[in-house]
Amino acid sequence: MKKLTYLTFSLFSIFSFAQEVSKERIKTVLSTLASDEMKGREIGTQENENAANYIAKLFKENNLEYCTGSSFLVPFTYKGKTAYNVCGIKKGKTDKYLGFSGHFDHIGTSNNPKDNIYNGADDDASGITTLVGIADYFKNKKPEFSMVFMAFNGEEKGMLGSKAISTDKNLDNIYNNLTALFNFEMVATESAFGINALFMTGDEFSDLDELFNQNAANGLKINPDPYAAQQLFYRSDNVSFVKKKIIAHSFSTVDMTKAIHYHNESDDINVVDFDNLTQIINNFGKTLEKLSPKNFSPKYNDTVKF
Ligand SMILES: [Zn+2]
Image (cartoon, rainbow, N blue to C red; front, side):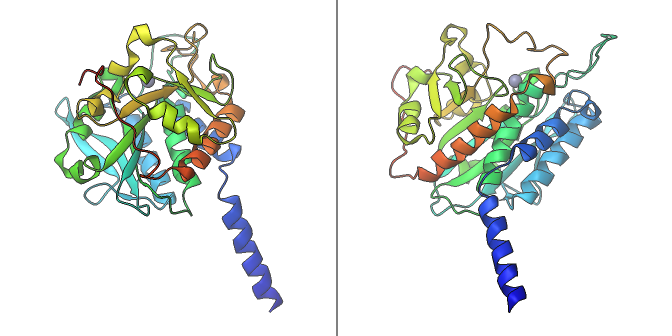
């Protein structure tokens, strides 16, 4: 009897602990993706495929289901060879989906004798870690929304992966029910708005940020895009879904006035603020828990160009 009580208690502890994503977990995932062994995850390389397989393993750990076919890996053709996006779903209480994405490829290696690996810790191992972290958060929960998690490949070569998967007919049943896509791009650092804050590209085109902020947990805040003149809304992976008239924005913490690591060999785990990233991921989870198709149905206004 004593044993049984202990077992019940332990299971309960594990269950309640699993609701919060730990900093250690965030560190493990991001550091693995941004490790030297991944050699900058350039599309077309073995290391790029290793990164895809690693993300698929994480999706399996999170009890996600396949988006299509019999694998988390969704193939497309790159220079006559097969490359992969990674896609997993979690069924919620309703058939309406929220999507979470980032890109796992980066720009490979250089000839710099001091450091020849573009680890891409911020760009965009941090984004992939965020969507994995959200899947972690909901591992033992059943949210109102169903969720689709997409790790895009080939972003650095012209958003190839997101273009391919967004036009993949096998995923139409998901896309037809996709309420909004959150694309995470460079979320490793403290934003110009401080910690526990991100900005959203194309904030002027929809009310997603307002609806999200109304429900935001623990002071998490989505801010307007301070770099709107750069039109990042039309230049990131979210645009493949904008073309389908799906609400899709990119979310970032990058401070353009300070980001000297952008597309530089110095974009490694030393630039990552793990406390801030862990906080953002958990607060995203807590906020998403409050969202349902009833209180979260963002719409574009007529200024957006599809
Ligand atoms: Zn990027």
